[in-house]
Length: 561
Figure 1: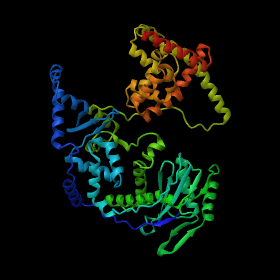
Figure 2: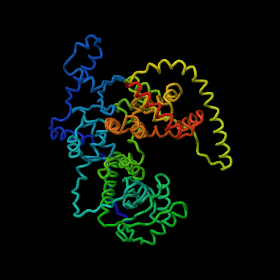
Figure 3: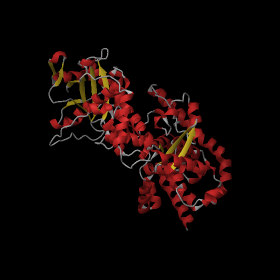
Figure 4: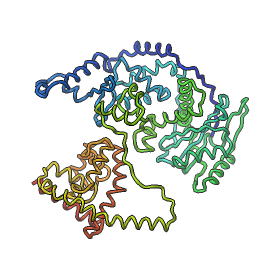
């Protein structure tokens, strides 16, 4: 593990005059026809506003033109006198639509927020906010005109025979490195520790006051307690942990010193078992070298944009931009691989203009704004009860027995409560159409108990609440959840060929739906299945395989005939 001295970055902020020159250069160099013009933008807004004022009879008379196409693709929202044009994406999400008149300012906001990310990384961040309304060539042109990126542009030499270190999975191999910041101290902080998980390229940045073993061990504990310790902790450049102290004097920390760091780590955290590893090839350090360069470049860009010298605070913001940036090696962001969902920076991910977001102060303001724009309030999440239990085993066992005895009495009360609803809905069940029956057949194997129970009990209410929390239509939510949890049952119901076509049509599943489905099946559905099996006097597995599936298949065959 090597300590590299970082050059003292300049903190002179980029002036408004420099940005004005950059905008002028952008307008001169961006001559491509890609991107919506400002005239077309306002034309679409005006036509959609007129469309909303038409009566149903007048709308039927408009059989051609761009009205129907633009109405299906775009959506006009208005709040506090500000009108925005949103684009409807194929996955059901909505993105802000940009045009050439505001394209430079939109890219600039994303560029500064990502600490001057470039090319592919910048374009991925722009697409997440503005969809395809801003082409990639516009992002490349912007980087060439950015006054901060022009200074830092350098040629990266190509290395022949590059052999990367292949690591699969999260938490298998991690690497620690240090960046020497003694020439630009921030209070007592002199070093910047860079830790990266090789499997998912997840970086963690921590400021250090000293590079001694105890200080490094405490910092590693702070990191590992959050993301978990790796099996192999790797240091840079093989045998020595080199650094350069003040005045250019070379200082080296040998393998024995690194072993002392791991020993101190194990003494503080006895359950943490790891070994000291080395790179299998000297050229495999290329990824770590590039990460250190990216950290220094983005940290210098953050200090220049904000005019602040507190790099000990800025390093955490740089860490967020690295974690949420697209990585070409894993073809995703490290955040998605680690947490299973797309990153969201507060309200910035909402399709709302920054001017309106600045006016929000309370949750009521947010709800009023989204209702005024005709958007769904997607901030609420599904809350799950429970707590961290540190009670003795005997007390915990007694509490479990009380919960089970209380759960045994719940089915009778629940059955009495839903009996009127069951009687009222029997006629509706008998007259169910074929389409509704197919939908019910898809839902039934997901929760593994009879269709009548799904229709009469509170389970459907729970499904609707979960779908609303995920911002999904209930039927679409069930289909996406079935993509993960009920693929096997889907094969039994629809047959192998039809099931495969159904799965392919649904496309990629939503990670948020996956998480809610897992939570639902773990906390509610398993217990309800067990209660229904006990009420029928059969084993749980027999209840799932022998009672539910034949009933669903037989009902579907009857309606198909």
